[in-house]
Image (cartoon, rainbow over all chains, first blue to last red):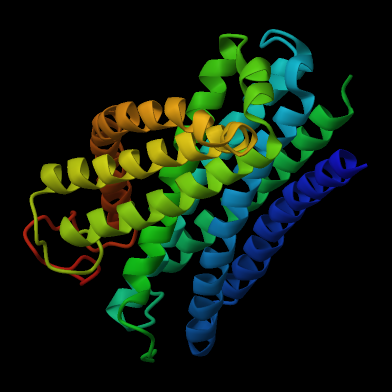
Length: 152
Length: 177
């Protein structure tokens, strides 16, 4: 009973972390897409808050992901099986999301260090792209996770 | 419009991001290698869920702290440079490796020590001595590799934001050049 509850909790946290990643990226992308200089300070504040939440979510995603694998234990399939291919694709998507997220957070930190909210020139489209790319990557991880959980 | 925030916030954000990235990348790399070597299932079964979660939390917290210190010392976190890049990366990696090795021994031997009492302390103490040597050595090498990755990511982010190359000579990054 305790093991089943722990497994349920770990899976729940795993899904919740992807939900935080995807929904937050959607909100910040929308804020940046408004192209309103008066709203830039709010957009940057929201982005900074999202960055903290997203790294906590990413850490929980990896931690609970390994926990889920541990629950399968010796039943893990081979790398060449369909399950193994999806699993490797998921690992690749997570790695890509980590790199995109690091670039995104550092870009926001650079803007914060300048003190001025100047999303002029290429800064707004670059930030929008970084947040937009986060969304499909998070969704791909979610789809891969569901596939792995339901494939025998 | 000027926004007022803690001056330490940008450095802390980058420290959290790159520290979390380093811990996650190390874990994912290890998982991938074990999976391809067909040893993942057995390895994770031996560690157990609670111990595995505790070890990842330990690695995560320790790596974020050490990465933040490295970024500050190497002048990559909006502060003037205080130490050589290579020495900072090696020192931070070695510190992280030491704490993680100690944590691994404590977490994995906890149940045995509780069950066997003082007699169960012999093997963990020997493991701690080996860990005190191996942990910092391996950690320093990994720290240097991840230090280079961190510096490269900061350089790319600076280019994307149009603020020039990474400062290595004590100028805070982020100032428009």
